[in-house]
Image 1: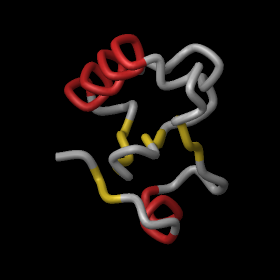
Image 2: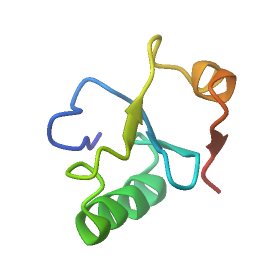
Image 3: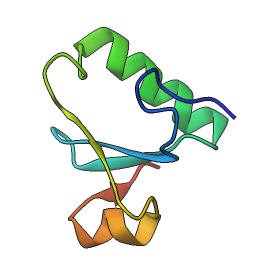
Image 4: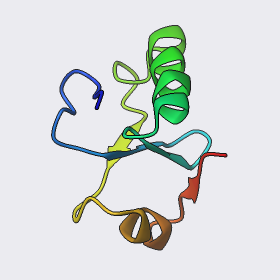
Length: 68
C-alpha cells in the first residue's frame, strides 16, 4: 500500500484540475497519480484534494470521478 508524502492517511486523493479521484491502494492508479504529482507540482500548486470520510462516495459527492 503506497501513499503520497503528507497524505499517508488518505486512500482516495483527488486532483482538482481534472476532477479525478485516485485510489492509492490500486497500484496502477497510484503510479499515475504519483507521476502527475511529480511532473506538475500538484502539491505545490494546491491541486490535491482529500476527503472526509475517506471514501469514493464522498469524492463523488464533491464532483470527482474515479480515475480509469
